[in-house]
Length: 566
Image 1 (cartoon, rainbow, N blue to C red):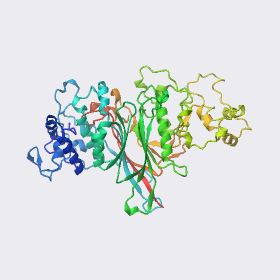
Image 2 (cartoon, helix red, strand yellow; image 1 turned 180 degrees about the horizontal axis):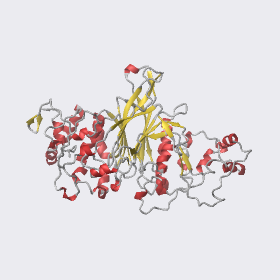
Image 3 (cartoon, rainbow, N blue to C red; image 1 turned 60 degrees about the vertical axis):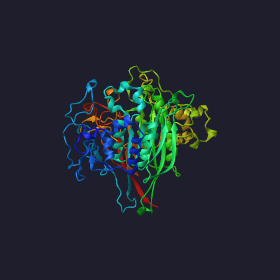
Image 4 (cartoon, one colour; image 1 turned 90 degrees about the horizontal axis):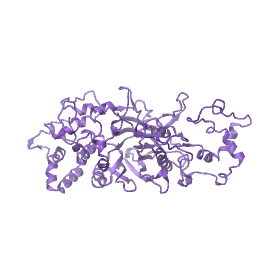
């Protein structure tokens, strides 16, 4: 096994391009360490490899020809599979002492082969305009979403990482792996979760700046030490606005947790040769939603706040939305009610058990009887059930309180009133009857009369919705293996909780079974880095491991944004 922080197991040290600023940062950091710790680190091959950047002829006091280039298998494992790629199958023993306290893999099993991730090229499926057409060409960029596992959270919950050797859990080891992984994939936009504040200020942000990023960070509220960050390449995007979102609201039980989000509006920078062209701004959001599987009501409320901020940031003068990318650890599995709410744009939640919202039933050993009741959040929050800020909605206040008998009778025949709740006791002739619309109650009349009453109807109907038209960049299934994709392995059970959503155009499909179908619009999905299945990760001793230094896998997707003329 070849790990990223023990590269000296090979006769030749893999060399990678390293910015001069990053080299200076490394040397300065090393010089400021105590002598004992400095000597220990200098024996580490990562630092040794960085030192040889200034003198590549010297590696462990032995001459090394600069004409020889042998990539480390750890780096090869991140590379898209090519027919000409040749990967060594020779295994290397784990570089740890006293490993009897945990179950290690056989030394002959190479990690880089077990954890290989292919690049899926989807450009053939995308409707890419011809360069000579009116639509113009595409502005291509990569987006990475990564929960990098805050070190303080490891220290707070060591029982979750008993399968890991202590050496691979150290921040020094993990930092080298994480930075090299990010540097290899070279995203243009980087959305990180569980970013520890002191590590961000002292190490991550300075390194990212040297890599060409501008960074925005938001720490979780209260006494939490980690938060979310969005970094973007300053030569590819210009910041228009940055809007942090705090989910904690004093006095509200449904919003009493310290999670946060970030919403940025970025302007893509076109090359000078395209000076006569125009391109839409891009809204990028990042969040880490509450984990607690029992409190689905809090998760929904947090997501509603984030969607309201996205709605405000992405809405243009004509009322339409600019392209949107939503990244994050949502602590909800695919096809859960929360996932369906984001993707389908609506959710009927009234009477739903709170522990069902995120689909994490396997982690609810003693489910609470808490049920979601309408309205989900109080009106003082200032968010409508369409996930928009009340102050930005054009509502006729003079009509909001006309709750006369005739006004309320309108809702006997609205769609929500005709839906039978799933947990309602079935009584033949009683609860299975759908009210019939009277002949004099025309559809046009219903629409007209309900136009100003939609706020009332939604607030007390148990239905929430949004109009951002978001779909996932991943399918959540590996057809070649017949198994679900996995982004994390909490308590040894594989699950997908990390996502990259992007805005697309909904299409009508009567056979969709209630699922909204989408096709690419102005923003096109061009490719993605494949995920792994649970059995594959189990064969590598789960997450984290000596190869991947977080308990989550990174998500990486390539997009193309249409460029048009003025």
